[in-house]
Length: 331
Image (cartoon, rainbow, N blue to C red; front, side):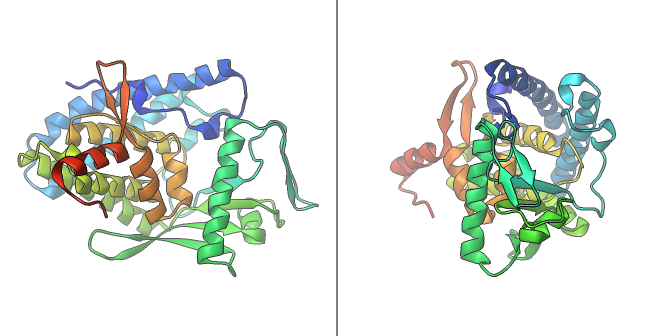
């Protein structure tokens, strides 16, 4: 059985709110916990998928795995290293329901000593950290999207195109006073944004779209396709599944780790090699839009070659190598 290692789970920069490498080392230990869960999940999934005879059956097994990983995340949250400092245990494994989850983004957030001055309507930054630099980059991306797609509006709707051509309303990006109200600040703060999860029915539809996409790829593998890792279209379909799942979150806390572990497990099963997921795969799914997310992940997601020091191959480079040998042309 293929071993999934910590190399598949780079520590997200957005949690690195300190410039102390010792703190980063502590945060990186979580990758080993995710790797252990993914390796166990891979063994379980192989046993279940071995008896599946249809795309629907396989999709149900991916759904079952998702629920099992949510329970793993809840159990992990009962340990000190498994829970964020500002979180509550009851938030882990608790469905989002009809009340959306709101995540805050903005220039200077998570710098050392930053504060939001609601009276002046500004973010007062402190010393830069990896997390604040990530926020700066995401804020720039959000600003560019508003300029290009919704220059006169305070809400930007992410529409998600499914395999059938149907569009489903994904999450929203908010700015101005609308963002301030959603965040409980009740003021317009320059450079402050937030994302708000989609409605419950749309989230469920997007999640199932992700499971079905993975199931179709697994069906290709079960039908004898041993070359999927060298098929650019198959890799793009997997990236589509990543976006569907991040646009269809189910749990209040811990859902990003659940999705990471599920994706690493599914990728290893389908393609025969573990991925190196982008450290910011989740937040990019929230803010980049579907096409932007696809471009970003295609250029940053890699492959982990176990047994050779955990070396990583960039998927975009692999796509170019594939095209040189087969004559295929990337879209």
